[in-house]
Image (cartoon, rainbow, N blue to C red):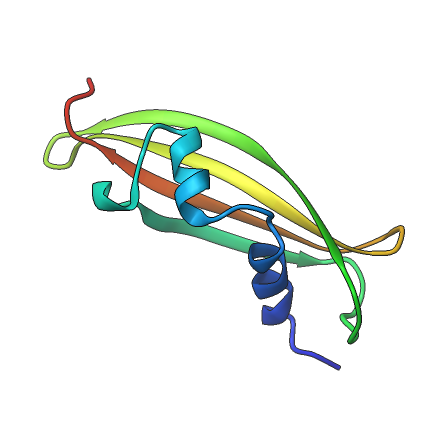
Length: 103
């Protein structure tokens, strides 16, 4: 049986767009210095070898201002990993997107 970390790897690999395309949704680029924030994987069923499909959504968007860091956005998103009609895993993640000239 594959280890659960492969649920995250499969969901990210099957998201259907590049990281740059995802960043562009939020008017950001890799040159802006996006950072991986938090992560949580919930297993709903054991992984097995085979084909999966991925669905996903943006779950939150928060603008914050730090005294030393300046303005940044935190984007929450999740991917669901499916084997047929069975949801196998949900991988929730957040991105931290620094904003140079925003307030």
